[in-house]
Length: 336
Image (cartoon, rainbow, N blue to C red; front, side, top):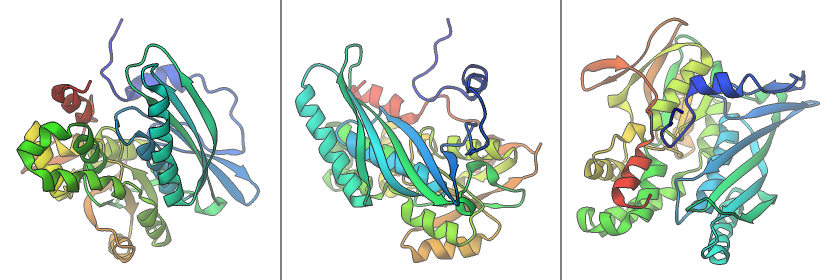
């Protein structure tokens, strides 16, 4: 029996074990399950319901907060406005009541900040888990002609990225490995890193980029920038060149990754949005006017071209990390 590393199921396994069992295709499903596509879109007249679901397993103290933003970021990348979500919380028996209150309080704060409702869900105490797990299903709406896909990039499109690499992972580590980090990096840097959780939403830049002519968008999650760029290229059936030296890395992320010997481009990165566009200058200006920094970090190539990453003058194949750096670091820090 093959053992997989903790993290996403490998793409080849998804093709063999998941995508061959998807029931009966329907004409009103406009965007369906595929590598790199985080949302499904279902037609309802002139509008579309956009659906996504996400588990949140890596966050500890701020689990409810991340659960809401991770799911709604998928909707934002699809050009949809979030409306509501369903939240399932699975709790280990010890301290279940306090933990449930903590998760829901943070989830409620995040939902209120976005102006959306937690419309339902499920909570359950269950054996066989050593930490709380949240699973979020989020629902958004969009005009039928405004829905975007991860897999709609075209050859020659520039690859733009907002904010920076490893934002979510940095904030999680600042909270869950705080005792180890403060003596090494200082109270001020760790406090700033923790506050990066307030930069997790990509709604402002997604709205701006969509209006400015983004052709495709994809948010950065598990596996970091390396995984997200590969997913976007694979979904589009294209080659890509990622210039790793142009990827913005926040000071706090760089310091934390240097301390743990981690790669910031392979660290879970909710808060960053990838945008494929034939008009990078226009998109960069629109995103900046929305108060968000962005940078052009690569270009898409025709089908059959290689997918490569350039770093420090060297070029190699762009391969999704087998495991997100967050899991390796948390193990070393003693949390898992």
